[in-house]
Length: 175
Image 1 (tube, rainbow, N blue to C red):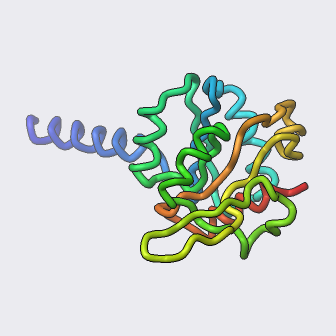
Image 2: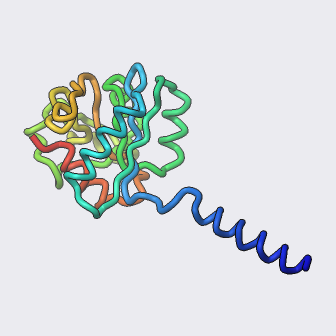
């Protein structure tokens, strides 16, 4: 009887644990403005983005309701996000650390001149590339009732799925 009970408990625990978390998205997006970003707004943007991207790659938007420099640093260091949407000030201060992926091969730099910046990578001369997509007046955000003012989307160098992240950012950047 005890063995049967133990087996039932183990089976229940296994079912519970496999239900937790669910599958990881192909592209996780971390979004935090200078005053935070409400989760309801993130849910609305996520739903819209999923309809534009389609079933693959899968997308998840995670927001922070308040601005927290510590949270931003942890999210960047953890390496689990394919795209970041942060306040322009944060984007500019992070550019000194050369941790962005160039978007020149995915999006026309001339379409986003404010996202073209010069970064000097270690041991290499400084070069100008498109690293960020300013979201002021962005079509995707406007369609959902948001201005996007002061926000910049970018891909960090430690993005887990680079090609998928570029594919999703290209959809975000559509004019």
